[in-house]
Length: 219
Image (cartoon, rainbow, N blue to C red):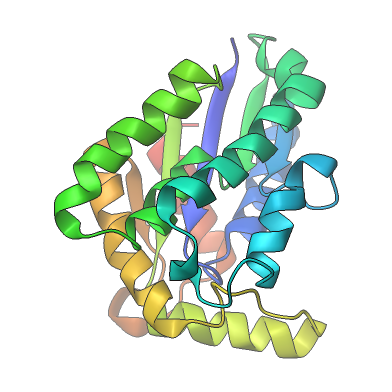
């Protein structure tokens, strides 16, 4: 099996940027790699996720409980894996770099649950996806951490510059703040590597963040 690296973080934290930079770095070193991004927008497996994020099933993230929402995202990953990138993962020389994965379900859905239910949910989630569905378990998870107020500002800036409509997660600042706390918990429980992208409120450059990622992954 190949090595699987996952980049996580709140909306607006720069996951896509870092995924692209890490892909360039690996290719530059001649390392076979496969980039992935979840949800897999545009695929048939993403239909339920699309409906959820558009607000078709409820305008508030809390309208859909964490277990149901998790199943939407899991279905997207399962179909993507079995129809597309399983062959890449099975190649022991290939590094998989994914922006978001099962680990995103962890903090996004924990944020909907009472704190006393968090451990039970994580046990269920990882057993469901990694054992029951047979999806690969990541070797490394990087959490791009920043204050949720700053990440919301980044989402707002991106939305204005690109004309991209914000989804129900991005529209709810309180929900994103809860996700921040949940992500710290999930990272500690799962042994993820946490990178502070904005120490003292000062956003690091993409190149500096990449350097931190490379160091933490021992690449």
